Length: 103
Figure (cartoon, rainbow, N blue to C red):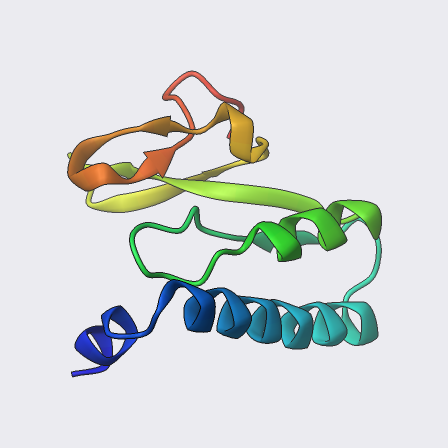
C-alpha cells in the first residue's frame, strides 16, 4: 500500500518529499553524530527517497558514508566507503559497490 501511494506521487511531489526527508535526517545527524562516525545510505531506486542530499551533507560534516552490497551466498550485506559515482548497476536494478571495493 505504501509503495503504491509513493509511486502515485508526481515527480515534483517526490522531489519535495525527498528534500524534506533528507533535511530532517541531516538535522538529526548534525545534532547527534560526530565527525568520523559511519553513516550507511542506499542508492535510491525508482520512487525511493533520493539520499544524495544526506550523502553530501554527511561528507561535508566529516562523516564516513558507506553503501551496501548484497552478498548473496551469505544472505548478508557488506558496507563499503564509496561515492555514489562508484556504484554500479546490479541485479534488480540496484546500484552497489563493486565486490573488490574496500569493506
